[in-house]
Image 1 (cartoon, helix red, strand yellow):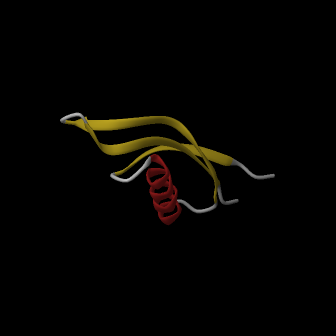
Image 2: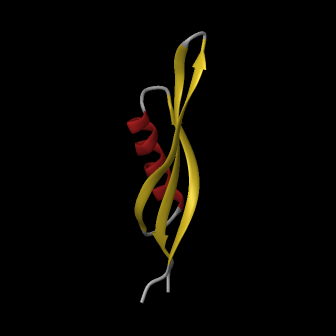
Length: 67
């Protein structure tokens, strides 16, 4: 039997939501072991002078704990 934990992270990108998600998952895998999934809890954009300057996502990352 395995036990999993979920942690919330925020990642951003100047390119797109998809890029922010990829950056967030990639960074999570550097710190957490046994990452199994992630889901997007929230998406936001930063706007300056009428233009989008950053795409921000809140991810819920699931990883399995060691025995």
